Image 1: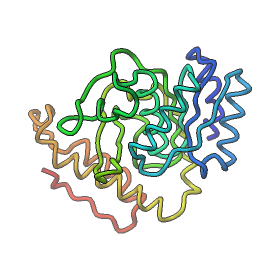
Image 2 (image 1 turned 90 degrees about the horizontal axis):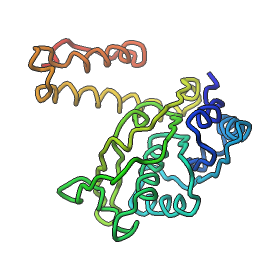
Image 3 (image 1 turned 180 degrees about the horizontal axis):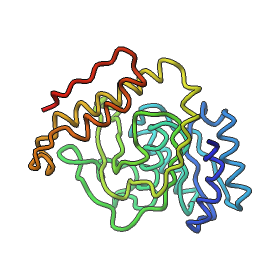
Length: 238
C-alpha cells in the first residue's frame, strides 16, 4: 500500500533527474497522484506533468504527447493511470526519443506490418516507470502499445522490447475505489485474455510438452471463484 510514493526514490535509483509524468485529468485529481508527485519532488526529481492522455489513445493523441515530450526533454517517463496512460507514455517515449526520419507525423513508421513499416528504434528508449491504477490491461508488463487510427477507426499495434517499462509500482488498494462497471470490465478483459491464450496455446513451444492451456487455466482459476461469483472454470481448455 502507498507504493506510488516510492516513485521518487525509484527514479533517483535509476539516475533520473527530470521525468515526464503522463496521466489524465481524472487521475491527476486523485490524492494518490498527489502522493506520487510529492514523492518525486522530495527525492529531488523534476517532475513535469502531462495530463492529456485520453482513453483509447489515437494517432493524434500520441502525436500530441510525443511533441510535448520533445519539448520537455526528460531523462525518463513515469506513467500514472490505466492502460491508456501507460500506452501513451510508451508512445511518447518512442516517438520523442527516436522520431521517424520524416518526423513525428509519420506514426506508421513504427506500427506493425502490414499496415505500418514495423521499424525498430535504432537505440534504447528512456527508462519508464509504470504506475497502474486499474487492473486488466497489464500494459505495465508488456512490450506493446495500441494506437487507434482516427481516420479508419482501426486499432494498430506497435511492438518491441523497448516498450517494456523498467519498473512497475503496483498498489492493489487503488483498484478498490474503481467504479463497479470499470471493475467488471477489467475482470472480463482478464478472462477474455486468458481464454485467448488457451486457444492460441497450440502455437507455443510448451504445447510440445503436452501442457495445453496450463498457464491460462491457472491464471483464470486465480480470479474466477474469488472475483466472479457464479463463474465456472472447466478443465477442458485444449
